[in-house]
Amino acid sequence: MSDKRLIMLDTETTGFKPEEGHRVIEIGAVVLENRQITNQTYHQYVNPEFAVDQGALEVHGISNEFLQDKPKFHEVMDDFMAFIDDSILVMHNAPFDVKFLNNELKLTGASRRLEQVVDVVDSLVIAKQKHTGARNNLDALCKRYGIGNAHRTLHGALLDAQILAQVYLAMTGGQIGLDLDHESQSADSGLRFDLSQLPPLKSVHASSEEQRSHQEWIARHLKHDPFQV
Figure 1 (cartoon, rainbow, N blue to C red):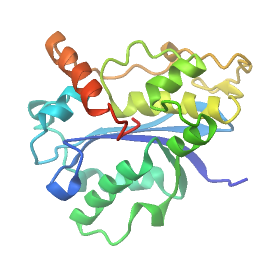
Figure 2 (cartoon, rainbow, N blue to C red):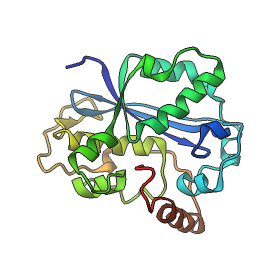
Figure 3 (cartoon, helix red, strand yellow):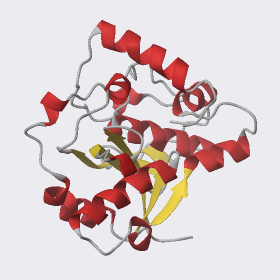
């Protein structure tokens, strides 16, 4: 068993293709220790210096205006890389996040790629192996494992990392406890988890019209399941 830290990580971006100039706008990460979700987190919004696509805005609700005063990636890179150093990163549809983060590293002039610093695990691959032929995005997995996510009306990097932590534990045999105050708790053999116990998140609210458009976009673009997010 590796003694490296296990970190759940997610990103939000301006679009889907870094080769077209799209950039990372939010990074969220949660540390697991001894199969417990801890309160060790990394959360950062990033000014991408690139316009957020309307389609992406409908997914995460993070606007260009909101990002204007946020630091640029090169300004937060050292803290981020120190947080994940020598760890195992678990990401849902990992190639997507890895591609974007490697692009950000490249743009700073860094010589290292993410996979040279950390080990990468794709939780989507695990889900597909366990549930062949079924939908395996986070919402579907939450429903399958009885994980409450009713407040996930829009994607968010830290929120999705916290949800992924519970999904990952459920898929790989459950958790020992939920260690948010450094006190051990008994295992929940029913694999039912309550996100209300997690730390409060900063909300970036979308209008009802944006949420309606988001749902329509998801239905239209994920019809053939190109991204399991």
